[in-house]
View (cartoon, rainbow, N blue to C red):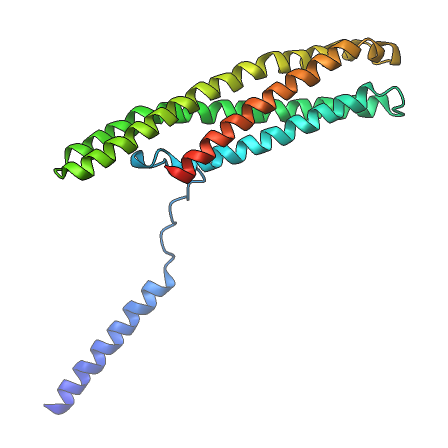
Length: 221
C-alpha cells in the first residue's frame, strides 16, 4: 500500500514537472504595443499636465523666434562673409519656428476642446455635494477657473493673430532672396527687416502674457 502511494506521488510529481517544463518552453503571447501618445487629461483637472506642457511649448516657441530673428540679423549683415550659408540657416530656422507655432496652435485648440467636458464634470461634482459651505467654496473656485480659462482662450487667439503677419513677412523675405541671393537684394531688405523684428517682439510679448496666465493658474488653481 505504501509503495503504491509512493509510486502515485512520484508519478504526479513527474507529470507536474513535465507540464511546468512545457509551459516554460512555449513562447508567451506578444504583449500589445505600448502607445506613445500621452494619456488624455482628466476632465476634473483643467488639463493641468497639458497646461504644463503648453507652458514648456511656449518657452520653446520663444527660443525659436529668437533664433529666427538672429538669423535674419546675420543674413542682412553687410559684413557677412557667407551669404548662402546665412540664407540656408534662415530658411531652416523659419521652418523650425513655423513648426513650433503650429504646435502652439494645436495645443490651444485642444484646451478649448476640453473646456466643456471639464466644466460639465465640475457641475456634476457640485450637484453631488450637499454641504452648503463646501458648495460655496467649490462654486467660487469654479468661477475663478472659468474666468481663467476664458483668458487662456482669448490670449491664445491673440498669439495666433500675431503670428500671421510675422510669418508672412518672413516667408516674403525667403521668396524674394530665393530668386536673387545677392548683396544688392539683401540691401533692399532694410525696412522689411525692421518690420519683422518689431512684429517678432509682439509675438513674444503675447506668448509671455499667455505663459504667465497659465503659470498663475497652475500656482493658484
